[in-house]
Length: 298
Ligand SMILES: Nc1nc2c(ncn2[C@@H]2O[C@H](COP(=O)(O)OP(=O)(O)OP(=O)(O)O)[C@@H](O)[C@H]2O)c(=O)[nH]1
Ligand SMILES: [Mg+2]
Image 1 (spheres, helix red, strand yellow):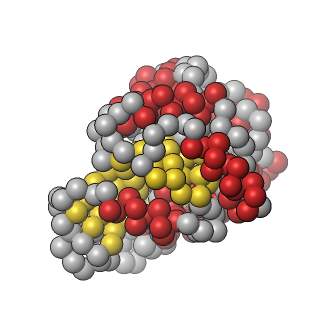
Image 2 (spheres, protein in one colour):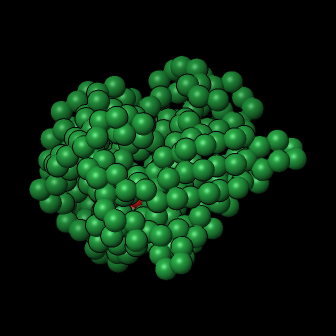
Protein backbone atom coordinates (compact mmCIF):
# COMPACT_ATOMS: atom_id res chain seq x y z
CA UNK A 1 0.00 0.00 0.00
CA UNK A 2 1.36 3.37 -0.99
CA UNK A 3 0.00 5.88 1.45
CA UNK A 4 0.20 9.01 -0.62
CA UNK A 5 -2.23 10.94 -2.79
CA UNK A 6 -1.95 9.92 -6.42
CA UNK A 7 -1.46 12.92 -8.69
CA UNK A 8 -0.34 11.12 -11.84
CA UNK A 9 -2.04 8.12 -13.39
CA UNK A 10 -2.53 6.52 -16.76
CA UNK A 11 -3.07 3.43 -18.83
CA UNK A 12 -0.46 1.50 -20.77
CA UNK A 13 -1.36 -1.39 -23.10
CA UNK A 14 1.01 -4.30 -23.68
CA UNK A 15 0.90 -5.54 -27.26
CA UNK A 16 2.94 -8.23 -28.96
CA UNK A 17 2.91 -11.67 -30.53
CA UNK A 18 1.74 -14.61 -28.43
CA UNK A 19 4.33 -15.99 -25.99
CA UNK A 20 6.74 -13.02 -26.03
CA UNK A 21 6.27 -12.45 -22.28
CA UNK A 22 3.60 -9.73 -21.96
CA UNK A 23 1.96 -11.34 -18.95
CA UNK A 24 5.27 -12.13 -17.26
CA UNK A 25 6.22 -8.47 -17.72
CA UNK A 26 2.85 -7.28 -16.38
CA UNK A 27 3.45 -9.33 -13.25
CA UNK A 28 7.00 -8.00 -12.90
CA UNK A 29 5.79 -4.39 -13.20
CA UNK A 30 2.95 -4.92 -10.71
CA UNK A 31 4.98 -7.03 -8.31
CA UNK A 32 2.33 -9.76 -8.09
CA UNK A 33 0.61 -12.65 -9.87
CA UNK A 34 -2.06 -10.68 -11.69
CA UNK A 35 -1.90 -12.34 -15.10
CA UNK A 36 -1.43 -16.00 -15.85
CA UNK A 37 1.65 -17.29 -17.66
CA UNK A 38 2.46 -20.47 -19.55
CA UNK A 39 4.77 -21.63 -22.30
CA UNK A 40 1.75 -22.14 -24.60
CA UNK A 41 0.86 -19.35 -27.04
CA UNK A 42 -2.49 -17.59 -26.51
CA UNK A 43 -2.47 -18.01 -22.78
CA UNK A 44 -4.08 -14.60 -22.24
CA UNK A 45 -7.59 -14.56 -23.71
CA UNK A 46 -9.07 -11.38 -22.34
CA UNK A 47 -7.79 -8.02 -21.26
CA UNK A 48 -6.14 -8.25 -17.85
CA UNK A 49 -5.73 -5.09 -15.81
CA UNK A 50 -2.61 -5.02 -13.66
CA UNK A 51 -2.03 -2.09 -11.34
CA UNK A 52 1.38 -0.76 -10.27
CA UNK A 53 1.40 1.78 -7.45
CA UNK A 54 4.22 4.09 -6.43
CA UNK A 55 4.74 7.31 -4.53
CA UNK A 56 2.24 9.75 -6.03
CA UNK A 57 1.52 7.66 -9.16
CA UNK A 58 -0.54 4.75 -10.43
CA UNK A 59 0.14 2.85 -13.61
CA UNK A 60 -2.62 0.65 -15.05
CA UNK A 61 -1.24 -2.05 -17.34
CA UNK A 62 -3.58 -3.65 -19.85
CA UNK A 63 -2.09 -7.05 -20.59
CA UNK A 64 -3.60 -8.06 -23.93
CA UNK A 65 -3.98 -11.34 -25.78
CA UNK A 66 -1.19 -11.89 -28.33
CA UNK A 67 -2.05 -10.57 -31.80
CA UNK A 68 -3.26 -13.24 -34.16
CA UNK A 69 -5.51 -13.97 -37.08
CA UNK A 70 -9.03 -14.73 -35.73
CA UNK A 71 -10.12 -18.35 -36.35
CA UNK A 72 -13.33 -18.65 -34.35
CA UNK A 73 -15.64 -16.73 -32.01
CA UNK A 74 -13.10 -16.77 -29.18
CA UNK A 75 -10.07 -15.56 -31.15
CA UNK A 76 -12.29 -13.00 -32.95
CA UNK A 77 -13.22 -11.52 -29.58
CA UNK A 78 -9.59 -11.59 -28.47
CA UNK A 79 -8.51 -9.56 -31.50
CA UNK A 80 -11.36 -7.02 -31.03
CA UNK A 81 -10.26 -6.60 -27.42
CA UNK A 82 -6.74 -5.79 -28.60
CA UNK A 83 -7.92 -3.21 -31.14
CA UNK A 84 -10.33 -1.53 -28.74
CA UNK A 85 -7.76 -1.41 -25.95
CA UNK A 86 -5.12 0.25 -28.10
CA UNK A 87 -7.47 3.05 -29.05
CA UNK A 88 -7.41 4.93 -25.77
CA UNK A 89 -4.15 4.58 -23.85
CA UNK A 90 -1.47 6.94 -22.64
CA UNK A 91 1.32 4.75 -24.02
CA UNK A 92 1.78 1.39 -25.74
CA UNK A 93 4.38 -1.11 -24.64
CA UNK A 94 5.30 -3.19 -27.68
CA UNK A 95 6.85 -6.40 -26.34
CA UNK A 96 9.27 -8.38 -28.51
CA UNK A 97 11.00 -11.69 -27.92
CA UNK A 98 14.68 -10.75 -28.24
CA UNK A 99 15.68 -14.34 -28.99
CA UNK A 100 13.95 -14.33 -32.39
CA UNK A 101 14.46 -11.71 -35.10
CA UNK A 102 11.42 -9.49 -35.78
CA UNK A 103 9.20 -11.25 -38.34
CA UNK A 104 5.99 -10.59 -40.28
CA UNK A 105 3.95 -11.01 -37.06
CA UNK A 106 5.88 -8.19 -35.35
CA UNK A 107 5.65 -5.96 -38.43
CA UNK A 108 1.89 -6.52 -38.60
CA UNK A 109 1.63 -5.35 -34.97
CA UNK A 110 4.03 -2.45 -35.63
CA UNK A 111 1.61 -1.14 -38.26
CA UNK A 112 -1.21 -1.15 -35.72
CA UNK A 113 0.66 0.47 -32.81
CA UNK A 114 2.90 3.05 -34.46
CA UNK A 115 0.07 4.68 -36.39
CA UNK A 116 -1.57 5.99 -33.22
CA UNK A 117 -0.94 9.12 -31.21
CA UNK A 118 0.21 7.40 -28.00
CA UNK A 119 4.00 6.98 -27.64
CA UNK A 120 5.33 3.46 -28.23
CA UNK A 121 7.96 1.94 -25.97
CA UNK A 122 9.64 -1.24 -27.12
CA UNK A 123 10.43 -3.86 -24.47
CA UNK A 124 12.96 -6.26 -25.96
CA UNK A 125 12.34 -9.21 -23.67
CA UNK A 126 14.15 -12.45 -22.77
CA UNK A 127 17.63 -10.92 -22.95
CA UNK A 128 18.63 -13.31 -20.13
CA UNK A 129 18.96 -15.85 -22.96
CA UNK A 130 21.26 -13.66 -25.08
CA UNK A 131 24.97 -12.81 -25.10
CA UNK A 132 25.83 -9.08 -25.04
CA UNK A 133 26.72 -9.23 -28.75
CA UNK A 134 23.37 -10.76 -29.66
CA UNK A 135 21.55 -8.18 -27.51
CA UNK A 136 23.22 -5.44 -29.58
CA UNK A 137 22.09 -7.04 -32.84
CA UNK A 138 18.57 -7.60 -31.49
CA UNK A 139 18.33 -3.90 -30.51
CA UNK A 140 19.39 -2.90 -34.02
CA UNK A 141 16.80 -5.18 -35.64
CA UNK A 142 14.03 -4.03 -33.28
CA UNK A 143 14.85 -0.37 -34.01
CA UNK A 144 13.72 -0.77 -37.61
CA UNK A 145 10.11 -1.54 -36.61
CA UNK A 146 8.95 2.03 -36.15
CA UNK A 147 9.43 5.42 -34.55
CA UNK A 148 9.62 4.42 -30.89
CA UNK A 149 9.82 6.68 -27.86
CA UNK A 150 12.30 4.39 -26.07
CA UNK A 151 13.68 0.87 -26.35
CA UNK A 152 14.48 -1.17 -23.26
CA UNK A 153 16.26 -4.52 -23.33
CA UNK A 154 14.77 -6.43 -20.40
CA UNK A 155 14.21 -9.80 -18.82
CA UNK A 156 10.75 -10.09 -17.32
CA UNK A 157 11.89 -13.30 -15.61
CA UNK A 158 15.02 -12.01 -13.87
CA UNK A 159 13.74 -8.42 -13.56
CA UNK A 160 16.76 -7.01 -15.41
CA UNK A 161 15.91 -3.64 -16.96
CA UNK A 162 12.36 -3.65 -15.56
CA UNK A 163 12.82 -0.78 -13.03
CA UNK A 164 14.16 1.61 -15.67
CA UNK A 165 11.35 0.64 -18.06
CA UNK A 166 8.84 1.32 -15.27
CA UNK A 167 10.45 4.71 -14.50
CA UNK A 168 10.18 5.67 -18.15
CA UNK A 169 6.48 4.70 -18.22
CA UNK A 170 5.82 6.63 -15.01
CA UNK A 171 7.47 9.70 -16.53
CA UNK A 172 4.88 9.60 -19.33
CA UNK A 173 1.86 9.56 -16.99
CA UNK A 174 -0.49 12.50 -17.25
CA UNK A 175 -1.85 14.27 -14.20
CA UNK A 176 -4.84 12.52 -12.70
CA UNK A 177 -6.21 10.69 -9.68
CA UNK A 178 -5.89 6.96 -9.00
CA UNK A 179 -8.07 4.87 -11.32
CA UNK A 180 -8.16 1.88 -8.95
CA UNK A 181 -7.68 1.45 -5.19
CA UNK A 182 -3.99 1.93 -4.43
CA UNK A 183 -3.76 -1.13 -2.18
CA UNK A 184 -4.33 -3.62 -4.99
CA UNK A 185 -2.20 -4.94 -7.84
CA UNK A 186 -5.20 -5.77 -10.04
CA UNK A 187 -8.29 -4.14 -11.47
CA UNK A 188 -10.05 -7.40 -12.31
CA UNK A 189 -13.01 -9.01 -10.53
CA UNK A 190 -12.19 -11.78 -8.06
CA UNK A 191 -14.23 -14.43 -9.90
CA UNK A 192 -12.31 -13.92 -13.11
CA UNK A 193 -9.00 -14.08 -11.31
CA UNK A 194 -9.99 -17.36 -9.67
CA UNK A 195 -10.96 -18.96 -12.99
CA UNK A 196 -7.69 -17.78 -14.49
CA UNK A 197 -5.63 -19.36 -11.70
CA UNK A 198 -7.34 -22.70 -12.36
CA UNK A 199 -6.84 -22.36 -16.12
CA UNK A 200 -3.16 -21.52 -15.60
CA UNK A 201 -2.58 -24.88 -13.93
CA UNK A 202 -4.52 -26.68 -16.67
CA UNK A 203 -2.36 -25.00 -19.32
CA UNK A 204 0.88 -25.72 -17.52
CA UNK A 205 0.06 -29.42 -17.18
CA UNK A 206 -1.24 -30.25 -20.65
CA UNK A 207 -0.09 -29.92 -24.25
CA UNK A 208 -1.13 -30.23 -27.89
CA UNK A 209 -4.72 -29.13 -28.45
CA UNK A 210 -5.81 -29.28 -24.80
CA UNK A 211 -4.62 -25.80 -23.67
CA UNK A 212 -6.64 -24.12 -26.43
CA UNK A 213 -9.71 -26.25 -25.72
CA UNK A 214 -10.03 -25.41 -22.01
CA UNK A 215 -12.21 -22.75 -20.43
CA UNK A 216 -13.02 -22.38 -16.74
CA UNK A 217 -16.26 -21.15 -15.18
CA UNK A 218 -17.29 -20.79 -11.55
CA UNK A 219 -20.48 -22.67 -10.66
CA UNK A 220 -20.63 -21.71 -6.97
CA UNK A 221 -18.71 -19.29 -4.81
CA UNK A 222 -19.55 -19.04 -1.15
CA UNK A 223 -17.33 -16.44 0.55
CA UNK A 224 -15.60 -17.58 3.71
CA UNK A 225 -15.94 -16.18 7.18
CA UNK A 226 -13.41 -16.06 9.99
CA UNK A 227 -14.36 -19.62 10.86
CA UNK A 228 -15.31 -21.10 7.54
CA UNK A 229 -13.29 -21.55 4.37
CA UNK A 230 -14.36 -20.00 1.08
CA UNK A 231 -16.09 -22.70 -0.95
CA UNK A 232 -15.61 -22.71 -4.70
CA UNK A 233 -17.05 -25.07 -7.28
CA UNK A 234 -15.69 -24.61 -10.77
CA UNK A 235 -15.90 -26.44 -14.08
CA UNK A 236 -13.23 -26.93 -16.68
CA UNK A 237 -14.97 -26.97 -20.02
CA UNK A 238 -13.52 -28.87 -22.96
CA UNK A 239 -14.76 -29.73 -26.42
CA UNK A 240 -14.52 -33.53 -26.61
CA UNK A 241 -14.79 -36.61 -24.43
CA UNK A 242 -11.16 -37.50 -25.12
CA UNK A 243 -10.02 -34.06 -23.89
CA UNK A 244 -12.14 -34.63 -20.80
CA UNK A 245 -10.40 -37.96 -20.24
CA UNK A 246 -6.99 -36.30 -20.37
CA UNK A 247 -7.98 -33.51 -17.98
CA UNK A 248 -9.56 -35.89 -15.48
CA UNK A 249 -6.53 -38.19 -15.65
CA UNK A 250 -6.13 -41.70 -14.34
CA UNK A 251 -8.36 -42.05 -11.30
CA UNK A 252 -8.79 -38.25 -11.26
CA UNK A 253 -5.04 -37.64 -10.91
CA UNK A 254 -4.82 -34.76 -13.41
CA UNK A 255 -7.78 -32.77 -12.13
CA UNK A 256 -6.57 -33.47 -8.59
CA UNK A 257 -3.14 -32.04 -9.38
CA UNK A 258 -4.63 -28.97 -11.06
CA UNK A 259 -6.75 -28.29 -7.97
CA UNK A 260 -3.87 -28.91 -5.57
CA UNK A 261 -1.67 -26.39 -7.39
CA UNK A 262 -4.36 -23.76 -7.95
CA UNK A 263 -5.73 -23.80 -4.39
CA UNK A 264 -2.78 -22.10 -2.59
CA UNK A 265 -2.74 -19.39 -5.27
CA UNK A 266 -6.47 -18.79 -4.74
CA UNK A 267 -5.98 -18.77 -0.96
CA UNK A 268 -3.37 -16.04 -1.36
CA UNK A 269 -5.86 -14.11 -3.47
CA UNK A 270 -8.85 -14.37 -1.12
CA UNK A 271 -6.69 -14.14 2.01
CA UNK A 272 -8.01 -17.27 3.71
CA UNK A 273 -8.65 -20.98 3.40
CA UNK A 274 -10.34 -22.32 0.30
CA UNK A 275 -12.23 -25.51 -0.45
CA UNK A 276 -11.97 -26.03 -4.16
CA UNK A 277 -14.05 -28.55 -6.09
CA UNK A 278 -13.27 -28.96 -9.76
CA UNK A 279 -15.10 -30.96 -12.38
CA UNK A 280 -14.65 -31.38 -16.12
CA UNK A 281 -17.55 -30.92 -18.55
CA UNK A 282 -17.81 -31.30 -22.31
CA UNK A 283 -19.42 -28.53 -24.31
CA UNK A 284 -18.91 -28.98 -28.04
CA UNK A 285 -17.97 -25.87 -29.98
CA UNK A 286 -17.83 -23.59 -26.94
CA UNK A 287 -15.32 -21.34 -28.71
CA UNK A 288 -18.14 -20.27 -31.04
CA UNK A 289 -20.82 -20.17 -28.35
CA UNK A 290 -21.65 -16.51 -27.70
CA UNK A 291 -23.54 -17.17 -24.48
CA UNK A 292 -20.61 -19.02 -22.96
CA UNK A 293 -18.08 -16.49 -24.28
CA UNK A 294 -20.14 -13.75 -22.59
CA UNK A 295 -19.96 -15.68 -19.35
CA UNK A 296 -16.19 -15.99 -19.59
CA UNK A 297 -15.84 -12.26 -19.21
CA UNK A 298 -14.61 -9.26 -21.22
N1 LIG B 1 13.89 -16.79 -20.60
C1 LIG B 1 12.84 -15.98 -20.47
N2 LIG B 1 11.60 -16.47 -20.62
C2 LIG B 1 10.55 -15.61 -20.49
C3 LIG B 1 10.73 -14.24 -20.21
N3 LIG B 1 9.51 -13.65 -20.15
C4 LIG B 1 8.61 -14.63 -20.37
N4 LIG B 1 9.23 -15.82 -20.57
C5 LIG B 1 8.59 -17.11 -20.83
O1 LIG B 1 7.86 -17.05 -22.05
C6 LIG B 1 6.67 -17.83 -21.98
C7 LIG B 1 5.47 -16.97 -22.33
O2 LIG B 1 5.27 -16.00 -21.33
P1 LIG B 1 3.89 -15.19 -21.18
O3 LIG B 1 4.13 -14.09 -20.21
O4 LIG B 1 2.77 -16.13 -20.90
O5 LIG B 1 3.74 -14.61 -22.67
P2 LIG B 1 2.55 -13.71 -23.29
O6 LIG B 1 3.18 -12.74 -24.23
O7 LIG B 1 1.71 -13.14 -22.21
O8 LIG B 1 1.76 -14.81 -24.13
P3 LIG B 1 0.18 -14.81 -24.60
O9 LIG B 1 -0.66 -14.50 -23.41
O10 LIG B 1 0.00 -16.20 -25.08
O11 LIG B 1 0.07 -13.80 -25.71
C8 LIG B 1 6.63 -18.41 -20.56
O12 LIG B 1 7.16 -19.70 -20.60
C9 LIG B 1 7.53 -17.46 -19.79
O13 LIG B 1 8.12 -18.06 -18.66
C10 LIG B 1 12.07 -13.75 -20.04
O14 LIG B 1 12.35 -12.58 -19.79
N5 LIG B 1 13.07 -14.67 -20.19
MG1 LIG C 1 -0.27 -13.41 -21.80
